[in-house]
Image (cartoon, rainbow, N blue to C red; front, side, top):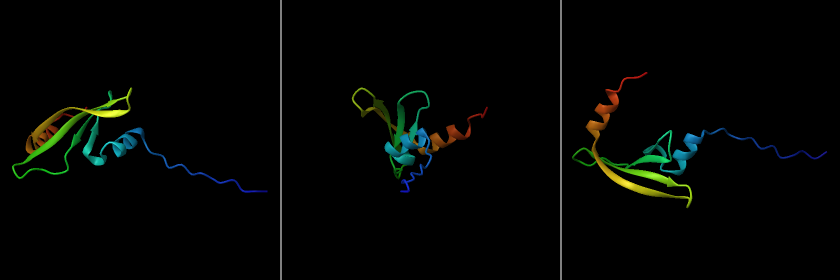
Length: 86
């Protein structure tokens, strides 16, 4: 009797799959839409980071840049730290 090839699937969440295909750890996806933030991998010497607001275009299968934000890293960190958890 021949032994069939056994395929072992490694579980990966859809969120992780999305991040892997859209910029890795620099990608912050929205949980209710096809939009996501895509951060640049460097911070300027003045403390600014560039962030693209992107959307997936399901009809054409490509991504579209909606706008670019230039944010102070300190402001982003402060906003995240001051959020109340439910």
